[in-house]
Image 1 (cartoon, protein in one colour):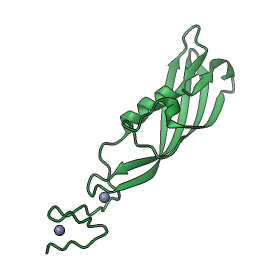
Image 2 (image 1 turned 30 degrees about the vertical axis):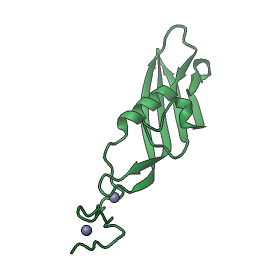
Image 3 (image 1 turned 60 degrees about the vertical axis):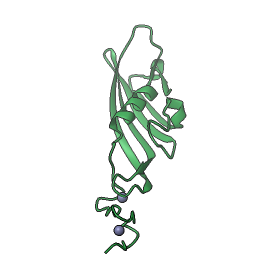
Length: 136
Ligand SMILES: [Zn+2]
Ligand SMILES: [Zn+2]
């Protein structure tokens, strides 16, 4: 959870700067391969009966290339916007759950280690980015 007390959200809003381990928002390795904690910067404000939040989340993602299968990691910066309608007796909002869902939804299924990844040779399995194929 990334709990933000509604009482702390004053007329100036509330800024948050936190380093959050992925476990704290319930992300598992099966959902996303994360190689670092999440750096969360957020700004929350109260607008009528809604808490609006702007969040920037930075984390080091682990991937395996869709073309050459190489394992690599890459930092990602994500910008999210959330609206929390204010329940009459709510004391806090949980940014963590919203971030978790967005991260899972926006995690690409297919990613390349680099745009011009040469892939692997279908015959000998050589990684053509790093090796010369001996087939020819
Ligand atoms: Zn690749
Ligand atoms: Zn080959």
